[in-house]
Length: 377
Image 1 (cartoon, rainbow, N blue to C red):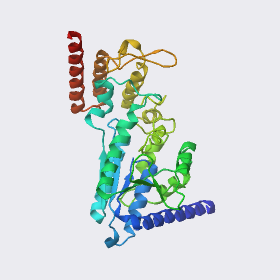
Image 2: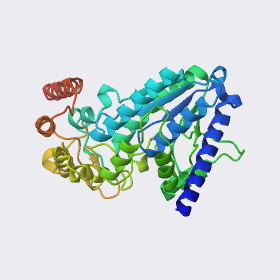
Image 3: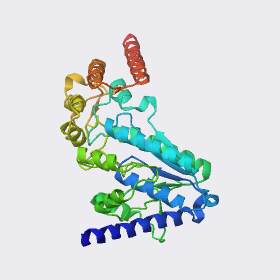
Image 4: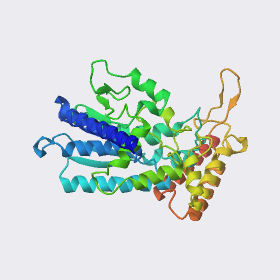
């Protein structure tokens, strides 16, 4: 009991220090620049959002002049239970901010209609992503949120991106943080790919146990508890796919340590989170796992791939001379769409939008027309 009390006291000290640091940073000379919190709904980003709200509540209303944007990214193929939790948390934060008069805006970024997972895989025939060709991360995650950040930089001159990244997440994360650590004893480090953006990592030195201890002890200022979040992790048996804002951070998405990612993710060998949800009783998720395994399996079957690239040319590996197949054939794309729509019925919820289907059919028609024109020519 004495040990438990000591650990709780340590967590209290850590929490108070984090909130105090955020308060001081909020009131710093750069307060005219907006804060953009990368919010995935996972444990780390939830802790950061909670700490920022707590810090702002400690500031007199007349000094709450910095805009704060809580920005989430929806790839449109997120794990259903995870996206449901994120949306619920976003609504709670938005309602609380409005009721308390806090300068907080809650936003969700999404890929453009022609850059969604289905528009590219089924519409344009992109082969299922893998470690060597991970086209999904840039288009679904990096581009939408980076555009939002750049728009704020254009409006205000700069923007501060507040991230829930920690050194003990992995060696690669530690190395990345250490590499760009500001040598001027500042909390802010320039973003490597977004000019005018600076990164602020308020929980960078926390250990995993610290995160859970704080979340367990302190309820969120937007109301309720963190029980649903804790249960989500227990059911999935792992961690979330992190907020990704650059290609350097992309390797953290689609790895064995990122279990809360897109349900369509074919980069990972096995989707542990969906399997975890199935194991605790969400049996309808099995249809999603089977479909994901199937699009991964058919990726390299030559009968489903075009000989030529989308530009009409054949491509060969420079070293081996081996032919590199082109996109999925239109017949294969139609097969994938038909199967997806069947899975959608089995799952009982929307998996693809009408806008995406319209774009897919338009892309097919345009491609067939172009091929027909080339033959006639």
